[in-house]
Image (tube, rainbow, N blue to C red; front, top):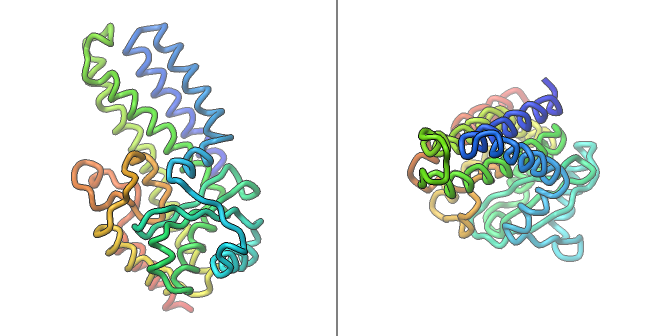
Length: 276
């Protein structure tokens, strides 16, 4: 199944969820409003969601003059992957992490936290950034960004309407709206876990050694739990990062993780290394 088809299914499913929520809130008029909002969000997500995410995390774009080593690593990886040079952003967070965003390879960006640059050596950084370029190569960065945008919006709607029955003309609306974010999260999970393994494989190939990413993931698993993300207002964007930035937060969010277990990812990378 192509990623374009997956994107279409995802958008259709999330639009349907919006229409359903709107119908529960205010029957036909609410359903129409939900359809309009979802349609506008689809357009917005395609063109602007990457900029919104980067802005939300206070990303700062850099050039080769700002950080020659980082720029050269990304440039070399992009050449090996046969990709255009993506834009590079640094996120002012001490938790080590990274993500890629954009609507296509020609309009892509990779973002690293300050903590990642401090913690990783050159080889490990190559593994992490190779993983992110894998997402770009597979054209699945748009899927993740759209999923994050819609899931965040559904969560916000639920917060507004979920606690007040007076907002709805149907008795079961508050309960249904309460579970809407879980439905959106399940949609995210269905597209996120498999693509992490695929991006790991690509990252190992682009960097030249599966153990580079293996070593990086071991560090990320440890430090992401002990160093919290300061910006905790965007939990719906967790699926975009190489490792769940909110893994250290207890509660239901841990049960519905958008990432496979790091131990499983490490095991697959070690299998790849044994075949080299």
